[in-house]
Each structure stands twice: as C-alpha cells, then as structure tokens.
Amino acid sequence: MRGVFVTGTDTGIGKTFVSVALLNALRAAGVRAIGMKPVASGCIRTPEGLRNDDAVALLAASYAQVPYDLVNPMAYEKPVSPHLAAAAENRPVELNAVAASHACLAARADMIVVEGVGGWMAPLSEALVAGDLAHAMRLPVILVVGLRLGCLNHALLSARAIIEDGAKLLGWVGSFIDPEMLEPEANVATLRQRLAAPCLGVIKHGATPEEAAKELAGAVHALQSSA
Image 1 (cartoon, rainbow, N blue to C red):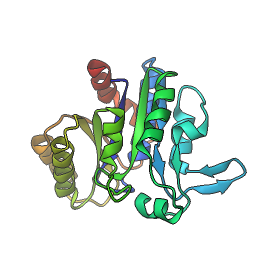
Image 2 (cartoon, helix red, strand yellow):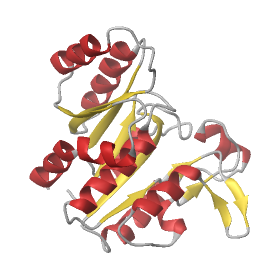
Image 3 (cartoon, rainbow, N blue to C red):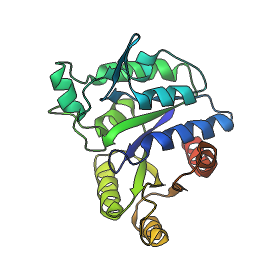
C-alpha cells in the first residue's frame, strides 16, 4: 500500500478538507505525499484547461508540484454527477487512464492521498461507481462521515458497502459540518461503537487547517503501520 482512498457519506461533507489535512499531516511526519482527484465534475475553464477547485487544493497541499493532468485525469465541466457530466461530453471515465496517472504519481512520492467523488456508490458510468476507483488503484479506504442529522444511517450503509465490495476500510474521520447538530458527542460515540473500523480523528466545525492536520495524527500512524 502506497496510498489511501478518501470517500465520504455524501458530497459536500468535507472530503477535500480532510484530504488536505491528511496531506499536511503526512508531510509534517516527513512523508512525501501527493494528492489526487481522479474524477471531478464542475470544473472551470482556464487558459491552462479545465481546473477543479478540489484538485487544485490537493495539489497545493502536496509535497511537490506535479502536472495537473496527473492529479485530475478525468475533468468535466458540467457541475452534475460524474456519469452525467461524462455523458454530456461523450468522454467516459476510463479506469486505465486513472490507474496510469496514479502509477506516475506513485513513482514520485511515498504516499498518494486519493479523494473520491461523491460517496462510495456515486455513479461514474452505466457500469462504474466511485468505489471502483479504489479497486483500480488497490487502495484501502478512509470514510469521511459528515456529522449532521442522518449521519448514522449514511455512515453505516457506506461502511457496509465498502466492506461488502471487498475493500479494506482503514478507518473513519468525523467532519462536523452542522454546528447546530444536536447530541454531537452521543452521535460520535454511536459511530465509534457501531462502525467496523477505528475512528482516526474528528474535525470540529470551523477548525483551521493546522488544527485538522494535528487531529489526523492517528490517521498518519494507521497509514504508516499498514504500508
């Protein structure tokens, strides 16, 4: 294992923030880490080509600057589900292209932090879902749980799908996205009890990047122990 695949219980629940924090934590531990966003929709046209904010953030947090196309090989402009964006451009997601870009990055780094798109079952095509990216790169998984009402069901279903699909669930990270959430500690305690993987950190709402990186020291240890 030379990396990890970061998925989430939904879109917009902090996957990028956690992935960037993990990259910062790895770099602080002396690990040459590079971020990757294999598939991204909602990209912006620039003079250099399509660019995705999440991929740009991952690249900025990486230990070294590499070509953008390696970080985000499948970039789509339309801000919709990837399978719809890919169909609109008549350019399907290609696992071989993703795997090739990952191999190029892996040759330059000690570890690759790969951020998925949407949740584990987010469609990429008629036959592919986001979880297939993790299988294509043979990576274990960290599940980011968006801590808000409904997170228990979403987290338990996501963890079940990851495990039943044959992937290794390395652990989970809580991301407080709703500052008004009731009984937050009780919800986290329930997740600790019921999820079939250890908690690798809980990111509070409004945490700074530095605070988040420190919170993920346990994730760095888990990655290094599993490598």
